[in-house]
Length: 382
Image (cartoon, rainbow, N blue to C red):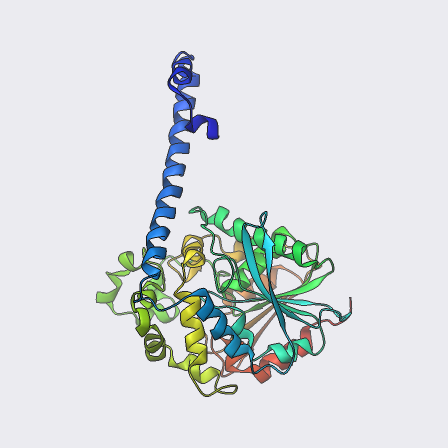
């Protein structure tokens, strides 16, 4: 593959001397490789420029500030959680991991956060979860405090890159027994994908208001909340779909926290049970003001942001039937349970429930009900 790119002049003459069919095939391969190489270079160049812009005073963030913001969230925990970077991919990538009660004999649980989040978003639930079992929560690659690698622009390859990294993480952390895999939103989609490819150690699959389950409808403007989008605004959709979802937040620079507070003040309200200040907003700002490679991967995998290009409803049937799937939705969420109910009709061992008075962030909207639900469904012993 590399040799095709670095041929010298003499070697190129030899290629020209080939018969015509082989020459045509070589030219096609060569152009394909050049195209892919240019795409990678262009992508690196684009993120390099973003990274350079990030260093300017206007964008007031840094890994240290994110570390401090996370510490402020986790400081309220009664249980001791340790944290460390788990190196994968020949030490080229680090997965930030917090964990507790790892010596317990009960079935461990692994938590995968949603789009734009990080381990800090589980702060309402970590004490409860760690009472009975080992708990591992990771920042997905490209998000939070984990490394931010450049992902493929092909949606299948980008998805596989992420779940292969999760599998390497499992090996490196030494999790060589069955565990419960719980994912929220985009984390639910990745949990499903992981269980499909690496089912050996997955004992239960718990999907909390999971994104990427349903098939995109033919007319997206007649679906759910998108029906409320004004006709004049829909004309800008093609432009908006080409932008990373949180570009505006990074463009706001030091005004990022007030911007989150203005548009998503409900997030602050959700965590008032723990602290009556802006620390959750500050944490989310620093999570998403960094180099947005995970965000780019999500955009590659998604179809108009609200759906996946390869939704789980088309492939979840091939999941090992011994693994039970638990779908939990918020009654007021922008996601619906329709696709999950359709899966339940075709596959055994599927359970679908809804939590009243909860939106997309069920674990924060209704933490008591969420904990009761987990207590009811999660297995303890191997």
